Image (tube, rainbow, N blue to C red; front, side, top):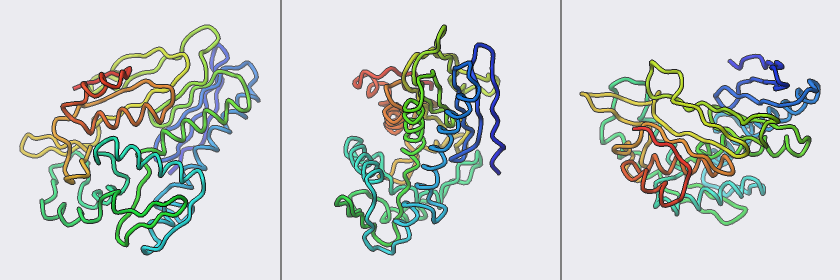
Length: 296
């Protein structure tokens, strides 16, 4: 159940607006002495989050992903915004050597990362593998043809994309410093008047509420990790980071990767790819000259 949105002014002229969207807690902070302006800008950010959630959810017939997944193998013509996301998904798939694949969501049918020891049988995973593979998708802009039985899931892109879109929408309406945080992925529009934005990194230690603080002026931060989503059987931990080429969890991934970049989509892509690369995460981030923090 979505929580009731709340807006509250803070000392120093920073207003916080909280709501739930895309299955996660969201917050928009606006620095201004004008409470009416802060409320209007925060609502603009929330509206963009809800627009993207409705358009790209796979659960409800409100948008394009549901339409594609239920087209029965027939071509679907998509709009320019969706085409851009599909192009990006294809580019990241190629750059990652197939490790990032928006057709791999079907694996959730056998993998449930709830902290239990319920690891699926190899035969269950193998049965789903023919339904995975971006190369099997017919994508000729603006038409996408998804083979019957396959699905796409843009969840690995959309939350970060929503952060960026909300930030741009707010910047188009005002020059107030703002911080947009959707489920721990965030972007700031500019530095606050007299201080930098302080951002907490999630701790992998249950006894700690934070893994540290980052100071940010203008830019984005995204984190990928498996602190809360995993399986444990016979002393072996199975991360929720699945390799779509095998259908099984990546071996030896970091517990958490946090990346700072110009946009949230860039930060999220780098953090996700680092997790997918497992033991090679640090060398990948170094080669990309990424500003990153890796916890193991």
